[in-house]
Image 1 (spheres, rainbow, N blue to C red):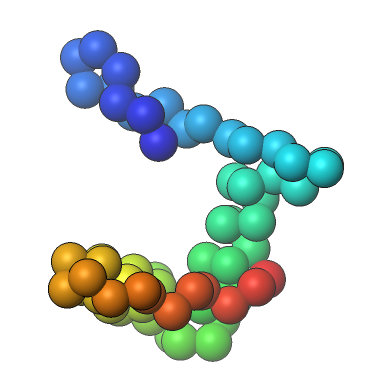
Image 2: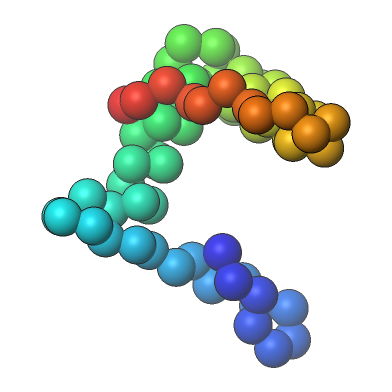
Length: 65
């Protein structure tokens, strides 16, 4: 995501060898939601990743979709 003037957010996609980062991330989020109980499970997983980063730890990656 990139913040534009006026606080507007814009999604930026990176495509490498026909693999879209946005599509891959969406698949990972969907997988976590199926496995861990919907949006609350996803938010818990993302909060843990954030906390690990703040503590200087390498966060565990989200599962592949």
